[in-house]
Image: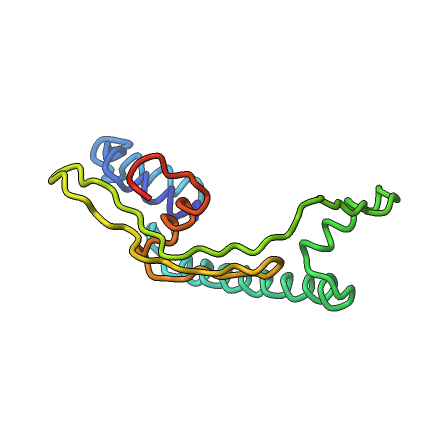
Length: 170
C-alpha cells in the first residue's frame, strides 16, 4: 500500500524536473530509485502485486482463524454468548440478589365499540374520516398485537384510545 502511494505521488507529474540537465531522469524517478521502489529502473513491477495478494490472503486466513478460536473459547466452552460473557464479568462485583419490583395496579379489560375519528382537511376544509367504526377488546394480562399495513391508522387508534388527540372529532 505504501509502495502504491509513493509510486502514485512521484509519478504524478509534480516531480518531472530533470535531476541533471540532459540525464533524462526525473526527480520522482530518482526518489523512487533511491528508496528501493524500482526494479530494473521500472517503478511498476508485477511482483509487488503478488506480494500484495499474498498479504491479503494471509490477513484473511488469520482473521478467520482468530474468529474461530475466539468463538470456540468463549461461546462453546462456556455456553455463553460474547455479550453475556462481558456482562457477567461486570456483574460479578455485585453479590446482592436482584430485587423484584412489584407495581400495584388493578387489571382491567379494555373494550371499545364503533370508534369514529374525523379531522378537517387543511386544503379543502372537508371532513376526512381517519377511523370508521373500529371495535375491539383487549384482555387484561394478555399481549395483544395491533397489526396492519402502513397508513392503516394503528397509531391514530392508539392515540384516540389514550385520549392524546387534541384536534378533530372523536
